[in-house]
Image 1 (cartoon, rainbow over the protein chains, first blue to last red):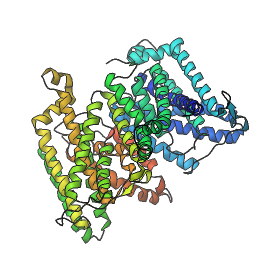
Image 2: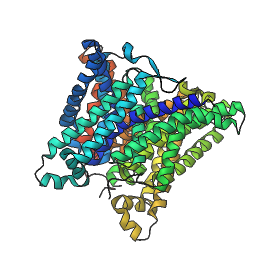
Image 3: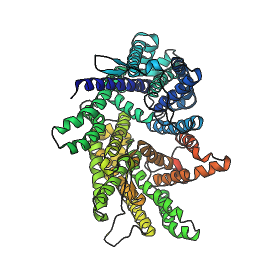
Image 4: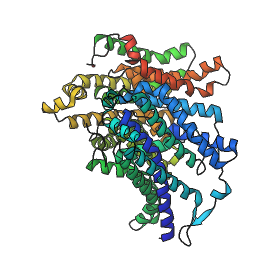
Length: 307
Length: 322
């Protein structure tokens, strides 16, 4: 197999991985600290993408639109937390799943009313739509490289916040015992709102960067949400480090599986059978991987919570 | 199960039995199809309630087993095997096997891991179905109605309707006996305090796995009937939103009861059927956006509607609680 193609796919896998990390980071923080299962997290990906597309069109500047979309997504996230999710923290997981499922229906329909049911396509400015040669002979899209760079930068920022700031200290303390943090005089309500909105920004950022690659449409965040669940199960719920490593594993194995499995199968079975079984097996690969990891470590690779 | 619940169950079943003549009297043949659909989804919902309400296992991938049952019928019919006496047991067997495998792995985890892993496994089957080009892939495949050696003709709406009715009634009877049996008591007690049950010497993992497999098997039957009703099978039956809908039926009706999920299925489908029309009355063209009302209704039911519809009828609450 062509090593250049393999290299290109490795970059695609990395890009998919950091995208998944952006979504999974918010999900795992919200679960770790507030003990909330938020299915509507995928809706925040969608809202980020729509806001960015609209703001890019308004400001007529790709960069400015994207930057303005970040505080806008933060505001939406904070609003959702204050209006709807706050009452759910004390409920059991089943209630949370159902209520946030209702929120998904609501958000998808709101988006359909405001922006219409048709997919939006947001183009890229000229300076981002070209290719660069990473190594001679292997041109790679600039925008995808930018996604990898932004994703890795955000991962570094999250790591810095969680490990080295006062806010991060509160987040870690909240994850192990939030009642105690409240009793020590920290305004837990504001902390929760802030953490949730921060997660919304990361999810929104993923949606913004996804927009130009695919299309912006109602329900676009949901397939990603389930992959993000797989990521945080593998990584261990509540663990940022686990989410990062698992996101890269999932992104890589999904992308590489789709390329390599049909080729590998051809070595063992007939070409026709390999062409049928290859894609089927590739689409199941990450779930099989998840099951295998859970058999060995039922609480994921880096379990953050005990009990 | 108290006296009241038994009467409520019998009354509901009597109402279902009376639907075909009533549709003739009121000249609404369309509603026979709606109620047939309600009963099929009621089978799925009540099977989920066995593990969700009685067993405390929040499985978010129950639609997968409906999909397996439906695809079993579809694939057999694709290869020219139309015999229902073969199709139905194979559909249930396939669901049982998949349920056993998924259950064995999922039940190693608990809490929120269990919710997410059951969701992920269901999604895996969904993507598998999408990638099977031979069986229609994304677009799904058509399925011939099962043949029952001339004993039963599913193309006759009335015979098909009463077949579904009998299946539902038998399943309710079976689950009623199961829940009250020693097995059912172990399942219910494990929901309350699993560690204590283990200390008493019960291998709770095996009991839960058995319950999970039974639920998957019954749901497979519902899928097989669903494929017959639609004469069509598609990956959409396994979509995670469908799993969510079945779960909502259970909660809406009242979990931890047998009749609750049946009432929940009826309420959900009737709401889905009529909500667009009601919204048209308030505002023209509002009907297409019915989900914007459905979403908040779900949230309200979760937040304020403890015990579901069932609690409205049986004020004392389900006998299984506590």
